[in-house]
Structure formats: C-alpha cells, structure tokens
Image 1 (cartoon, rainbow, N blue to C red):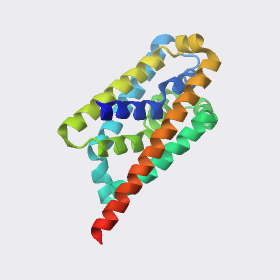
Image 2: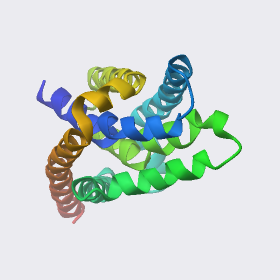
Image 3: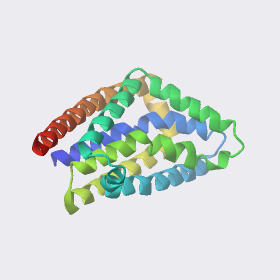
Image 4: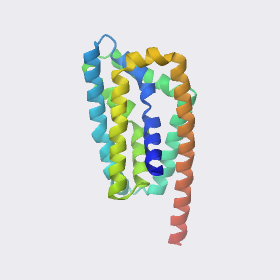
Length: 211
C-alpha cells in the first residue's frame, strides 16, 4: 500500500493536473465545451500508451543504452527536483505558458491535443522519468499491474480536471492555484531527494559487490 501511495503521489505531482488547467484553457480558447472535452480526451488517450510503454519496458530501454537503474534513479531524482524547484518558484508555469503561446500562433491548432498537451505537458520528461523510477521500485507482475492502474487513475483524473477546467479555475482562483502548485512542488522535492538517496545507496552497493 505504501508503494502504491508513493507511485500515485509521484506521478500525480509530476503531471500536476491542476497546473495544466489554466494552460488547457489558454490552448483551447475559442472552443466550446464539447470541443474542449474532445481535446482533453484525445490528449489523455495519447499520453496513456506512452506512460504504459515506459512502465513496462523502461528498464529494457535503459539497458539498451547501458544505463543502470541506480544511475537513472539519481538522474531522474535530479530532474524531478528541478521540476519541483520550477513549481515552487513559478518557473514551470511560465515555461508551459510560452509553449501554449507558440501553439496558439501556429496554423496547426487542431493538433494541440498531441503537442503540447499530450507531449510534453502530460507525458513529458518528468512524467516518463517518474514512471520508470516507480516501476523500478515495484517489480513483478502485481507491482506492474498496480502501477498501470495508477497511470489509468491519474490520467482519468487529468481528463476530469481538464474537462472541468473552466469551473475549477473559477472555484479555486489564481491564489488557490499558486498555493496548490507550490505545495505539490515541496512534496515532489522531498520525493526527488529520496530517489537520489536510494539511487546513491544502490549504486554504492552495486560497486562494492563488484569489487
């Protein structure tokens, strides 16, 4: 149960559905409610297989490139800490808003569900790294099945938040969004430090065993 909660919190905080809501509204400006729901559904359905593939085959992909799990835990933890830092100091929101602006000025606005919503706002480097990290800590069929259920649950929640983004933004307001984002950033920072610590210990253990 503890691993399941950790998996849910890590992926939820990394994807940050509440932080995506205002960006989703900016990207879908001018669309009606049905069109926005279609975009939200398409984006989450595209992100789903991406995260599931990395959950199932992330370790194999790392092996192909000669990357050990301890090394990836350290690198992934550092990456998640950077994301947490950006969340706490509002840097991540600014960067995502720049991505949203670029799409709004493009002619191919019909594909915003693919870019930047599905990639990289939902299934971005942080979410992919977090998925591989969590998968490495939940080995076996049961652990993997639980992780995939967590991915389904979080992306379902993400769709729900995006579909109701207009109402949620009015409910929590700008101040509420900032408070939630920064609180989640602090939680993610603590999880990132734990991943780095676990990676360092595993790396040292592997090195000592090889001697």
